[in-house]
Length: 174
Image (cartoon, rainbow, N blue to C red):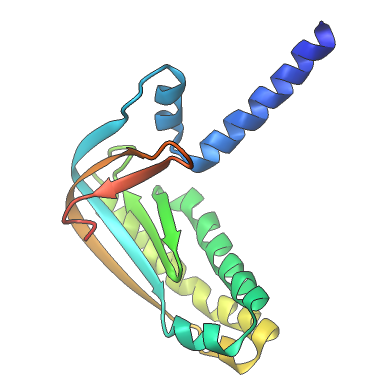
């Protein structure tokens, strides 16, 4: 019985860690408490969109493995920046990386937090360019990003049963 209880504890920690990687901590906690519809309105947030410029040129020139390797390098570096910039990673879609400040944790510094994140991302580009060039040659040397910020109200919530995701809705995101 003790061994089964210990194994159950290990499995619970693994599932909690997985849930924490998929959803904001406070949203995961609400779901575990039994709240079924998790949606909130936010009067003021800032959304940061970062796009890898001319990405189709890269994907046309390199193997699928290298495309994934490059994206993983870039997005992993951006993920590390989140820890020090008080923003939440919403999603990546292809060559676009999106974060939000002021959601799910409300803060009056959401715009400054996203500006700081944008500046940190821009400072990473020269190093990422060199790393990508080592993988794919000259194509990697042309790595560049385009960043846009937009502030305003949103609605945010969990969407989906399979692979549920914390999504943002509203004109601020569009």
